[in-house]
Length: 135
Image 1: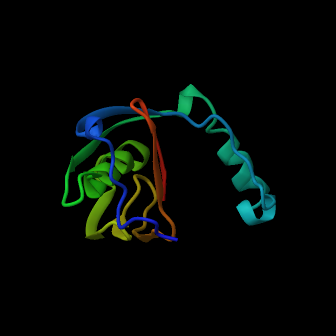
Image 2 (image 1 turned 135 degrees about the vertical axis):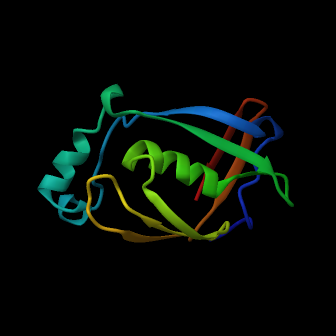
Image 3 (image 1 turned 120 degrees about the vertical axis):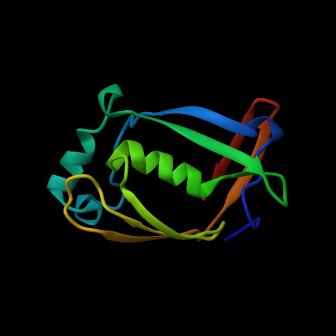
């Protein structure tokens, strides 16, 4: 469940970061049919490696509980790199437990309504240089 109301990051997260995100593997622990089928799995595997890596900005800001992710900013930056400069059409909700937006990926010819719900959350400070979290 939700151990904490939001992920609170160490103070050294505060500010804007240059992020490099590379897919290193793709697995289907529940089977390829539940992943979306053979073609979806094969397409995902093509994303492995530095050629498909995303470079984007991420921002962490001071919130009521401490340093938190600026969710709307971060989603806009990731989507801009993955789907095109103006792919985020609207953000109607950006809370720790729900993020709702309208996306129009470049070349898709359609608008997608997206809702991201946080069902579980965990964080752990390992030491002064390592912090683990998941949502």
